[in-house]
Length: 153
Image 1 (cartoon, rainbow, N blue to C red):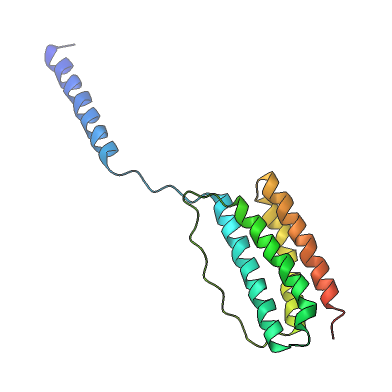
Image 2 (tube, rainbow, N blue to C red):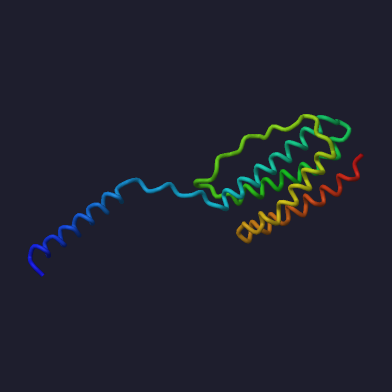
């Protein structure tokens, strides 16, 4: 191999190394959000919506409000438990309070509980074990709520 060929190959390697060094000087791509944090944020948003539904149902029917309070209290307990699992650094921003229909019926509550309970198995599959157990427990509670609300007329 000639000296020119050797020098040319060496210069090519140096230039490639410089170009690679410049690429690494650019800002790193933003990390994708933590899937568990995203899952928990969605669960929390859903729970906040259920709490709001119960609040609005109680405002719509003052006679029914005392009977609905234990349901709402359990949802608040679920919210607290979910929030304890949400990672602190880089966690998603707090979700705004959802706006729902001010005339919430018991049938609407029952349907919301059913829908929430039905979504829990898929969410549990996507969760780490400790959160999956919590999600499964929450789903069981929501299923019982849906059944119990059937007694209200």
